Image (cartoon, rainbow, N blue to C red; front, top):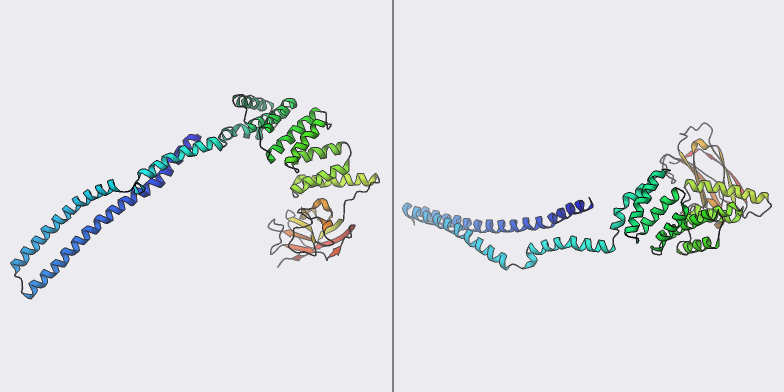
Length: 415
């Protein structure tokens, strides 16, 4: 199917190049012929007018006039016929002598050479083999708890890597299918084979994260020197590889090293602050901080802004509309929020606690001395208030690195 589509596109591309050239050459010939004929007819008309003037002035008799007109008509017919023959001969000579740059041969040769060069370069530098396997890759991605499908994919992908073992993504998806049916030893080997065939890119860091995870499971959820070595290798390529951060945080939580777990959970949150996972991790951070505080440890969570948010009495708004709450730097306008969260109108009234773990940009609450809190109900689903939205904003205040409590009532409408 790939070759059929490329052949069709090639024919269409050749048509776009050659058809305009052919039409242009035909149009030039037609214009040239028409121009010569028009010149002959114009000369005939001019001479006819002169003879009519001579006849009117009495310098010519009617018989002489008729004879001259007849001779001119015969001459015009002969000139046009001779012109067509001569033009055709000249055209043939001109075509033979015309420079190759104006000939259809050169464009045609270029059109024929183009796909050969393109296919050659694509075969050298492209990913045709991986494209051909995309169906197997997509089946792996879509596979959900279907051991029979995984076994079939293992068989098919196994044949692929046996025929050509230098195919990193085939090895990767083979490993994914091994892992899906609990064959972690085989999965770890296949992940390793995949990583060994990749350049030092974030994709390789991702695969190394899978290697570490498989080893971690095989080691009965204990970090070993070998696992730490793989993690170090992955983070040397991409320090923020999510699968590695998740593994480190999960191990720290398992060992009840909540300070380390919080540190890595915050790194994960920064990669996608508005995701569902980020919301879950924020709850995990709050629970871990309570555990630490209960043990008498210094949580060192930084400032916390506690916000009591409600709708004005009598204000009726669709409960499904989104509500955006943000802590912003009062000293600098136009910057991203220092911390933010979104919920719905149905959640109100609500008590929210925002701290540094809710940062959505390069700065957090600790980075500003003076801040303010804003809350908006959006009819468009955008965090930026527009006309018709409801919005409320606190006065500027200093958090002093401690806990601050703010009450906001949503009542004002954006003009």
